[in-house]
Image (cartoon, rainbow, N blue to C red; front, side, top):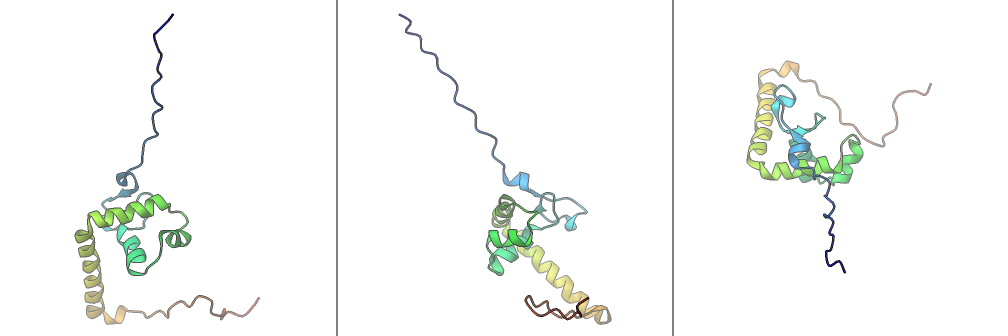
Length: 125
């Protein structure tokens, strides 16, 4: 009687994507700031929409259907791993805007806010 037992190797799991596969920073694109790979959506944009404006990842996805939930959550994880640097980037951007407004008031154009659900002001065709 054969007492030798044959065992098979357990199936290998598919590779798991990491944050590094979803988040890139490329000099010359979005000022070199970290962004979701293949897009111009910066990590700081996702942070603002999610944490400061209270949008869920699913809501962000409805506004930007070319993103993935994995990319959105990777951006949030990246933010929390690098929050001081990204908050500094946001503060630097805000300071730049304020300085530009102060130094070039003649270049500022005020655009009325978009009101969703407001009646269309264009005449019908």
